[in-house]
Length: 482
Image 1 (cartoon, rainbow, N blue to C red):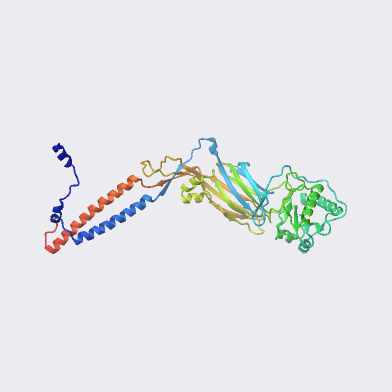
Image 2 (cartoon, rainbow, N blue to C red):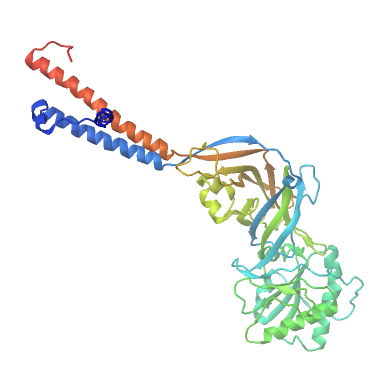
């Protein structure tokens, strides 16, 4: 047993010098003390550098060619939320085409419209008409005239003379204006006969093709004909309601009576009016529109177009304003909040590169806003635990996938051009894969051990060289002997 004990102790690599022999075989020197302090400081600096490197996470990337295996992969979801301060929801239409020019290339899953007032605040949700807009086509008026023609000089004074003024803005030789003319006159006569208007209320009309009224129509931002508006004496700024209901004597008379009765009250409680309670809004005070929703588009170059369109109106494209603010625009399914936190910052910004950007049209010049978007699929491999020995490009967690994009915008200003917003998109056929580059706990501990051993070895070599050099210079010893 004693032999076994002796044999086992002989494996000790860290044999100690007897305490009583330490003073005899070792000595303390100033050079050794200084070198020890320097070595300790260097070791601490290396420890700190290695710790910073251990806690720092970097990203690397590579391109991977896409392969569509599932037919569902041929479509892509587009999410949007845009504000148009001068485009009414009643006329704002969205459509999608592919690079071949095929319409309806996008399938609308959900598109919501909300009316906005002049301050950009939401008024009410827009509901599409349940039935086509009806027009009286055979009306003829040969009786007395109960309306008043307004020009630039008479307009503002007339508004101040009446509590409520209902004005029809039209132009010559437009079919919808020609059809409205007798209906408008008959409606005014009917209300006048019933003594509903009195002297404090007026039905008027403005011919926007008359030179004396052209500047007035531009000042009032009239870009749709016919436009029937309600002006109240106590209205703030240019706030007014616009009629969008049926163009018949009965419908206009019922609506105008409701507006007049509403004006006789102390305050107009609600400016979104459905006079005949048929579910279709007859008038509202919205001047802008907030469009939001999702579209399914093909994974091929295409275009999303937003512009004014109507089956019962004519538009003045020279004054049409499609100024807009992109509150949100992204591709793919919305990411979970946790997934957003692990995506690299530059990718997070590119996911909604157009968010909160405003694009303004030029005044009195037809302006088309064209946005070119390059959409890049991305995949982020989540970091694995520090103690894992797997490759940096592998993870036990599923990767975070999404779509980012870069964009360039251009304004087309040309007389005769129909103002609209064009979103030209192109989905690239490869995926940008990102993964996190980080040191494992194994690598960190290995580097710590290397620092400790390396500093002791190097400092020992340096001390011996300096000691021999000093002994040689002072004592005249032979150089080169260690």
